[in-house]
Length: 154
Image (cartoon, one colour):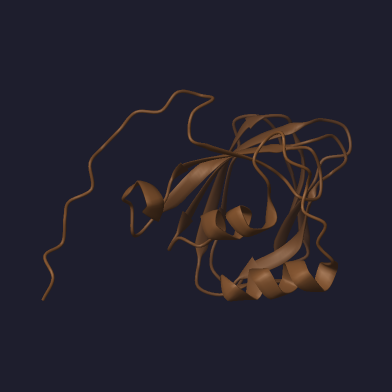
């Protein structure tokens, strides 16, 4: 059996981590914790959602997800129930729950945490580093990538 190495802790500043730009809107994503940095069980990061962009309704088959709203507000949809939220809110989504965001009036800045990992890899395949053009993906291509990581969109 191969020996396991212990992950090392670290501290990242607000603009540190793996920086990506969302494929569908110009929002910034920073991956802060993930398997690349040594965490095999949890991933987290921040996501900027420009005014009106929202996050489409989707679900994760095996992943629990939590958000902490760092800035902004709007409506969170969980299993077809609409919940208003604002800065400072905490949102928990158990696996297999349909969920999404609407933010018609304010930009959002979200801290996301998932276990097990996979959202980080989805972002890597669909988003681009700053300065590169956004990936031109069809809805079906995004869904194929999402399914690889245990996610589906409505």
